[in-house]
Image 1 (cartoon, rainbow, N blue to C red):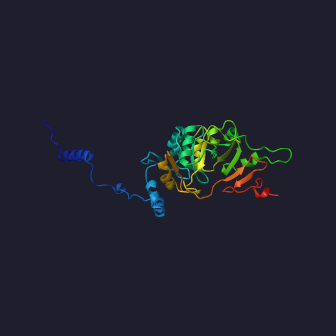
Image 2 (tube, rainbow, N blue to C red):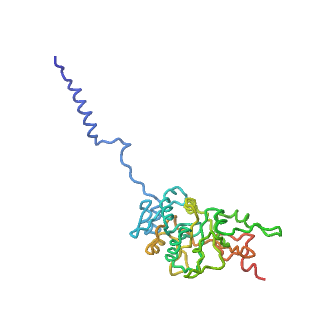
Image 3 (cartoon, helix red, strand yellow):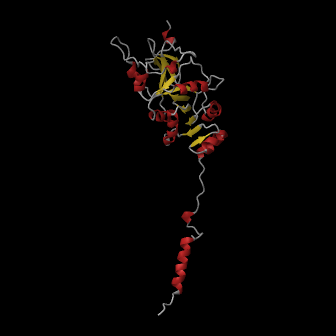
Length: 296
């Protein structure tokens, strides 16, 4: 005996099938598309400098026409994972720009002589100009220099203990170089001659971006501050740095925001007293002297 089809059941089945394969155009209130929120930071950035918006609104990793990598990182340290490609480039011999706790610096691998030579060409500095090193810790300073004076029983201050209180910080200390320091860092002239007085400036910047990069490397970085090519003046905006140095062969730039014209304080530790030869961001401490302090 044939079963009589139920019209209501058949209609319900057809509706269920249609709903499965053809969703209803109706949407619940919670499914309505949201209006994209515009970042107030980018709006403010655009008002301050429209040129910066081109870089600020792009993806995390962008390359210009010449192949230079641009990475924009928050100074707060929320997105340091973006720095992984930068670390890979440095290990591959790249020359690039990164922020410190003072101004931007051009950096490269300490042990790569070809990179050091290319850094000098990009910056336009002569072989006789010494380069500094960005150190990860006090152990690096002990490795590549003879270290800080420990003090004596005759009343000389324990400089090492005093320095530990201010590093990381905005200071560059000039120390006698150890044999582990590559000669390219203190090269003198275009031949094989090198400076007889082996000295080097060492830095431990108190900057989260800089420290994140350094701690991901196996050795320190060679560094020199970023300046205009024809003027003795620091470039503080990473966008302008990219515009000027990308055509010269720069491989990457880490954008940590604009800086202020306040370089590190340079202290010469090779004499009888720690002597300030350039006053900068780091304050003069009681165990430091200036040239006028030594005048009789």
